[in-house]
Image (tube, rainbow, N blue to C red):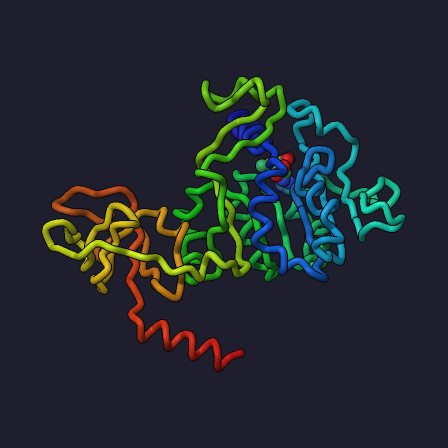
Length: 333
Ligand SMILES: C[S@@+](CC[C@H](N)C(=O)[O-])C[C@H]1O[C@@H](n2cnc3c(N)ncnc32)[C@H](O)[C@@H]1O
């Protein structure tokens, strides 16, 4: 029991890092047209530290939002984080500027008290979720699976930050494969910098925390969304020719191994195992995702008995497929 509590406390501590405004702006500029007339929910966001709340309240009119709702989680472990010092969890509601100064003034923001601790899974938070059109936040990574499952259960659009390796989770990969969830634009050069509570700075390895900025650097997170973005329609251009000497065949799947996305051969239309980074530039009109990591025998894909890094099995759609799909889209619209 003591161990379980300790682990929970550790996880809670690890979940406490705050997204920078610049990163929110960089990602959300690609989705601007989707916000008009919409209710946005940030449901893991203490407004005192959340730049998501800041971004949406200050850009409320520009984005043409209908409503912004933010809920703030109050940790069970009150000693851990200095910012979790309010007696009760709160939720805020902002419906835009009323006095014409284009700034969200305190008297324009409705502050409401929650009965519980603001857990996104609580019934009162789910009631707020039901009101939302788009959910945008950086949720606790330790609860990422549950968080995403809930978004799908309530059929919500979302733009959220998550661990990069969530791609490999058995609950997440099928959603990617079925084109129900995909990667957003991501962080500049894959480097994400987050603010952390000062008290937890010593929990990070040297080189991860920079005392002069108060930021930690993570290379293991990205943005996930189910909102259509331009990037998803950009075609990847290849230049290499296939040769059986250069591209090894797997022992346990009828597919070739490709070590870098840029090395995908231009003239190969069979199944290929590509690195996970392929998903950063995946265009569903150009490729089908077949399977993750395992061969026909359900063991890791191997070449002469050795397993390369995790691979995603994909297959290029031929031009006929693309034309077909375009005709289908045209027919449906
Ligand atoms: C990674 S931090 C991000 C905070 C904020 N969204 C941001 O991006 O700056 C995740 C936040 O979720 C909160 N949290 C943890 N468990 C939660 C839960 N069950 N329900 C709602 N929020 C939770 C944590 O307190 C933490 O502040």
